[in-house]
Length: 332
Ligand SMILES: *[C@@H]1O[C@H](CO)[C@@H](O)[C@H](O)[C@H]1NC(C)=O
Ligand SMILES: *[C@@H]1O[C@H](CO)[C@@H](O)[C@H](O)[C@H]1NC(C)=O
Ligand SMILES: *[C@@H]1O[C@H](CO)[C@@H](O)[C@H](O)[C@H]1NC(C)=O
Image (cartoon, rainbow, N blue to C red):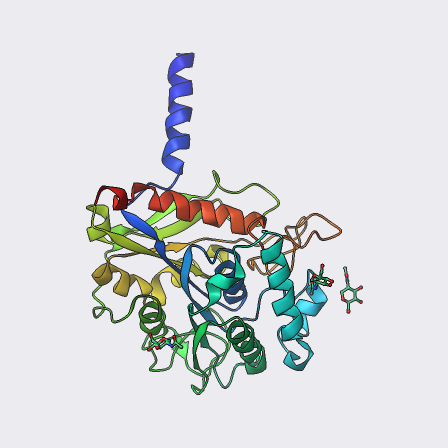
């Protein structure tokens, strides 16, 4: 009897981990909106040996907040003239030297796509232009879209609210296909979208990757196209939601409405949607943002949050490693 219980516990634990697919980990790209975009930017820089390309929608450069929430809320959202990009470049070079992030030279020629709506009142366009300068100073191949009159949102061709609307679910339709541009930036020309298959959107337990105090939900989502389930060689895209876009706030809207799954299905791309959660105290993260100002660091802030040692960074990299663990690249 006791043996059976133990076995059951073991099985449950194993199933909780993400399964491995035939994914070439070097074909991993990232994207995100707002706090998720800060996360995508710091993820691109910290794991540049693995991450092939990134899309940053309304986000700033790594270490912008310098571990300080008030800097995050002022300079990094509203007062871009106070962002010292040269200092942030030096900071990243220093982190590269000390090996807390991958070699900064990897960013040479890396494709980075930046989007900022001309009507964005939450993260000013100047912040995204600071991100542009940051990546250009490090030699990345940067493309931008700044002329669509969208409010703070992930912009789609037809899903979500009106283009100029500010509010939940922070997905607006503006006759522009961010998902397509994002994936084409990473992978070149892609096939047209097809309907997503609802059974291919899988809820998984994040609990074997995260611990309490990390402000991460016990569940995350991953979209696995039928082809990838059947063993086809696939690529991996990770998309980080913004603040107030947690499962508590908007259910599965972020994981179903950006348009990424429809392109994923027709292009052999698995899409991982890590999930942060709201937390009032320890840490204080009432809007459920990914950590781009240091709330997961031990105090006085150890400034690890934007590095490979950052708690959320490390956990999400492990999810990527597990999803790619069925790679058959060696056999070919
Ligand atoms: C954060 O920055 C503000 C404004 O510069 C400063 O007053 C405050 O002491 C800083 N907080 C920490 C924890 O460093
Ligand atoms: C970078 O490292 C140098 C040498 O250790 C140090 O003097 C400088 O303050 C660091 N700059 C930043 C922005 O971290
Ligand atoms: C940047 O990427 C574009 C699109 O793939 C390519 O055509 C261009 O040659 C690249 N530029 C540089 C400087 O590598």
